Image (cartoon, rainbow, N blue to C red):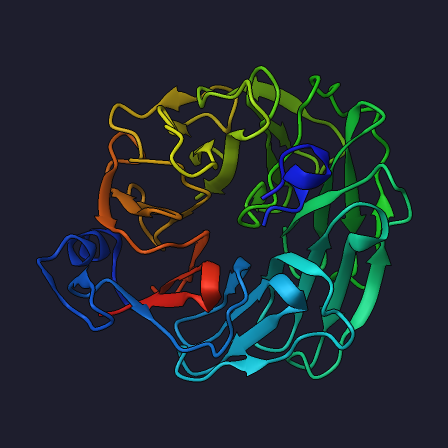
Length: 361
């Protein structure tokens, strides 16, 4: 995750909504590794690596991509039983923090870092070959997250450059990129930045709407654009900020009006009160949860085809809501950084030490 300053920047399946929530809160039973896990909860897969995966793109119950440290990109086509290392050649020094996949063959990955460390790669053959489609040449820029509206149009965001967030745009599926004009971007607050913690600091819903999560400044904010990043409005978040380690880390929108935000203080052992909130008006205003997530959470995802059920993950566990984010309950204590759910009913999570899991029936 990456608050501000160089040190801060480089820190390192068919279930409906209610059914999955019930599954995640079922009685505990032993699942090996000396741990008790909720029955029909996360099932860890064997990735064969100790990379930390903060980038996750879940395509279906069988197909998913993860991207992480040491330039690592993996892909599975059999529900996580086998993972194939499809890392771009020569990328071993890069920190991949986001991946967006259109299917099992086409994907775009983002590497973060100051200056030329921020790069974008694209594959059209399942990771057999990659093309570097963007390399940041501005030493003041530091890219954090990617999102796509469809298979052609997408955006990437950099921390503020010359007082405003910088937006990178593609109209050809990530094959080429251009910096958008910043005339429609509000001024950044002193110390404001985004967190490259889960690939969810920039998210979209539908063909034009996109939201950007911030922290680090006196007030955390969520910025919204209804025209693919040309003009933006900013709304104050109820999640506490006021410190480089605190703010909004992850966003999820199930449509252009209903959204969830999670965050807190990423430092181990630090309290993270009021670390979740929801909106029903497209992000114009945010309401804190009456029973928030239990601790710092970096990733959040709506369950497919559900109007009220979602999952939030972080290093200390998984929380679930069945009332649209008003109340949250911890259902698992495994460490994950990011979560994503698929139209055919699967949810995937990824995190430290090569951990990647999928929900079981």
